[in-house]
Image 1: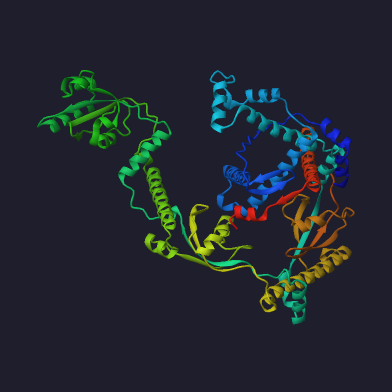
Image 2: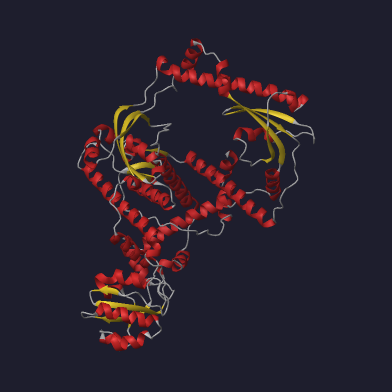
Length: 623
């Protein structure tokens, strides 16, 4: 990085930057609209300020991006998010000032051309619309000149980034070598020694513990912790009443609306009224079953003059026409083929017979979907009840109720986690958003209940008590921790010693010379997930002659491993096309370029005064 720094300090370096400007890579240009100046400064970068509003807006935008990308809110670590955002704002200010020093700019003509290609400003005829552009400016509360200035700044930053990233050099010969290394493989056997199997051979004295304590005294601190009471509910935990027929019908109608599916069956009817209607309808049914035409009998006998004149036709089946009898009619015509006659049905109109004249059904029947609809109706009722329950509990939290009162009123069981830690949290509520809420300064002071927190498919509310801040440990308090660490260290050393002995014996006399059993991993390459990261570091460090085994010992997080390997096979197992090589080269060069860009930003930090207003930052972060 020192050579890059010295080069960029020189005038040839600055000229080099200007000459190496790559074409504008305008992939998703952001619009940064800054409001009026804010005296609350989070940081000062050279002659620029990072204001409180800049900082808060950037955090909100970044959080929104993560949520839009599908990241669960409970997995967003707010502390890390705030740190990254501040770093990006400082980096942006450094680059922005460097752009000005180098005299980089973008013409009005270039900005106009880009804006004319922006889809949001296109009219219905596909051309640039001044009206839409003017509406956008009014909506944002800025002038055309302000928008141009913001675009000019953003595009200039893109130019500077591209000029640095685009100069990364990584020869194709080196890329080919890297690809060849990735394809190397070798026959491999492994035996792993777990440090815990050697723990009973370790003895730790008081002197060992005391010496370790004095050497690491500043590092031995208690964790911040609380006792955490919490409520947790999920849709599955909500009791709802049985699903009714009305619930099923509502889901059926919703299904039809979602799928744009409607019942287009054409039906005809014979309607009989009067005292002997039931007997007459049975007689007509018998005649129809013997083959007489439905339309002829409808014209002669039906008591509905409108449909009778049309041979009984009443058009498309519409349940609304039949009112309270709709379900009964739907059941008797269910599954009828064209020309088939229904059973007589009694309705509020009288006694009726139906036949289907045209069957154009684009939706499954309710009965065929009943089981599915019943499950959907139950889920819908649960979701509604769940949403209501969350709202009710949130209202109680706002009103200042404690968790005990909320649990009693809402009939929800309180759960508790003793010694809930701020770091190294392995509890069932180890999500960053829950930890942030549990150690929120105001919640701790008031011993209040947090707002609702989404955790997967559940919602939780937490109330921390008995807060214990980070504090130095005395020797007595630290002894169990020290003893555990020393046991692992010494047991791991014994595991490695044993691994080295086995490796030496196997290399000299073969695997049959030892009682240790090895797992055959087959042909393994450098990318294999079978090996741990520590094992990968030695797996291809030494070669051997074909047919001659080599044993390698390596310390690991779990203890130690012995790898027994054959000669490295450098024959590529798959042919890599020129296109794949070029694509790989692009990725490697981009990575190299990003490293150069970070080096460049680090250089700018060394020559630019950067001050962070810690009190303002703590206030903004609520700490």
